[in-house]
Image (cartoon, one colour):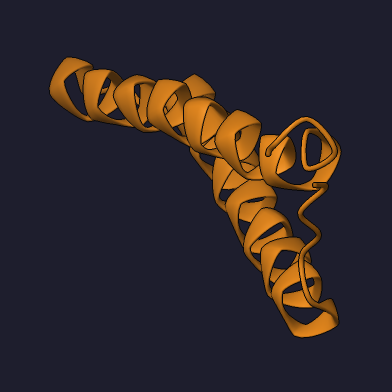
Length: 68
């Protein structure tokens, strides 16, 4: 049996993806501009975490046919 997301769930995931992409863009840009090493490390950690979250959210949209 193939499981599908409801329309509202798909739209919410798209909304979360948009938000996470904006956050990732901001963190990437600010880490390049930051001069404080501690702040730069925090922002780079946020970039890594944000990227992982985006990949997880994308799997909900692309791998739903594989879930049984």
